[in-house]
Image (tube, rainbow, N blue to C red; front, top):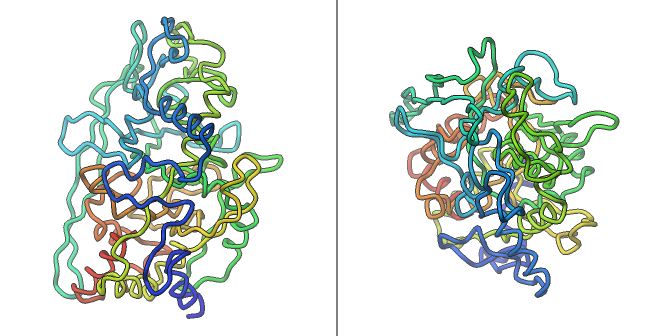
Length: 445
């Protein structure tokens, strides 16, 4: 009860008095389609120039090497998309395919086989690598084509309401390098990218303290430790398998676009992919450190949209219900950033991300069966909820959870199991108007 009450008191965002929000240094008062694309308001002119250089690199398409514009060549040889923005349109969430035969536009597939990789993470497939790449430059065979279809299941709530849920089923009608054999596959949609610099600035000590706290309802929560000698603490990615914003960016450039960097100097070609290994490169590395710096600065300084409708009675009721259900145990309303030597303006801020950045066992329903460092197949990082109420405006459709299976926030809640099962059951037991109030609160974030 102590934790729940503490969470309830902390549900109001920093800078809020009597339910009235004021826009803080890390927020922007924008609820339109570009709300995820605004810089922090207090950047200097030089910093704004750097921000927009990073945005240009994030939005521009890369091309096959060699090219006249050698700043943006080096695409592939194997890749998923031409630009970062392809999976994060307007910096929002990706979408899974909806109909059978529809191509994956902002979704990818993580691959691994049994065992542990060389750095302590998932062991890459010996032929297809860590990520399935459906595209390739001329002269290189793509890895194939994946197809996703949805299996509908129905659930009846205690008040008699029927809810339709769905789970994905994958198949591979085309494979470029032969049968995969035993493989672990995890479909993932792109995540929204606002507030990442603030989350990067939360200290390791804070994460360790959150993991060590006693929690109600059998909730545990732990840090995913990355690598060894000494291990780093994970905080980005669906399974918190990336330790920093810079690592997340460099990993995405390699896996999604086939672009090398000083963090990942080798192309994403396996020994079985000879043409891939022979393909021309766009420099060594293809994304130089200055470019990586600019993309990191851009993502680190994206402002978070301020909350809306905070004084509405339904929203205020929903906020209390969210806390009383126990959702705040993992979706922490308040964190404080620590020291940030790279980006000092992000240090020492009270933020409201609604996450603890820890991994939690979410039960068999959401399991992908694919461990990643210390995260099991059933464990996922608590996703931040700030900005979630703008999903429909930014992305045009609502799709939630790691594979986009949830078509609205109610479905997303109903998929919660494992450590979140008690909170889900409290939500299910609410009368429909109270469930709608809780969702209205989430839509105000």
